[in-house]
Image 1 (cartoon, one colour):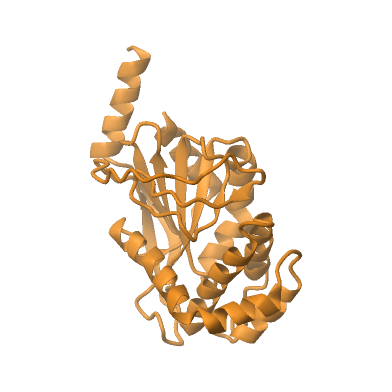
Image 2: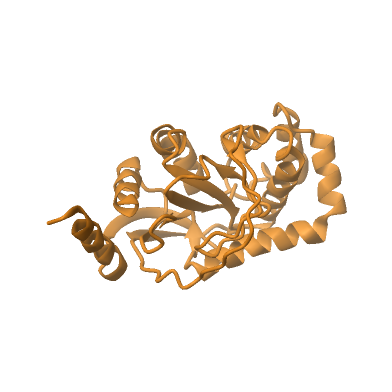
Length: 268
C-alpha cells in the first residue's frame, strides 16, 4: 500500500468508525452553580468532523518568542483564539483544544500526571499546539477562577505570556476539594500574588471592572465546547490543521499512552 493510500485509509477510519476505549471519570456540569460535584464514567471516542467550518480570518499570529503566546485567529476548526492562551508552535500539525475547570479533580490529575509528558514530547518540539479554554462545570468558585484566568491572560499576554503558564500551574497545585472554599476570590488572589510576573492587584481590578466581558468570554469558551460535543472536564479535541479531516476526542483523565496514540493517529 502506498503512503498516500495508507494515510487516506487511516483518516477514513478516524472519520467513520472511531475508536472506543474505556475511560476514566470526569467532572460534569449537571450541578454547575451548586455546592455539589457530579462525576461520571466517560469513554474516549474518536469523532468525525467534515471540517464543515471553513472560517478564514486574518490572523495576527506571529512566530512566538516564548512557549506561550496570543493570537486573534479563528482556526479552520471554528475556534476563535482571541482571549485564550496558546502553547507551542503556530506551525504545529495538530491543534489540541483543552477545556477544563480549575476545581475539577480530574483536570488536576491530567495536569499533574499526563500534561508534563505531552509538553516535553509534543508541545515543546513543535508537533502539537495547545489551546487552553474554560469550561465551568462545578460551582460559583469555578466561575471566579475562569474569569480570573481571563484577567491574568489579558495582563501578561503582551509582556510575559509564560507567566500565564506559571499561574495556571499554581492554581492547580493549590487545588483542594471542590467547593470547599479554596477557590474563593481572595484565596485565588493570594495564590496569584505569589506568581512571578502577575500583578494580583491588577487582576483584582480587572475582575471588578470587567465583569460582563469576562463572563461573556468564559461563556464563549463553553459554547465553543458545547458545539464540539464537550460535556465533561477535562475534554480534549485533537484536530489535524494540515489535513483538516482528522479529528479525535478524549474525555476524562486519561493516561498518557492514550494521548500519545491519539496524537500519532491524528497527525498521520
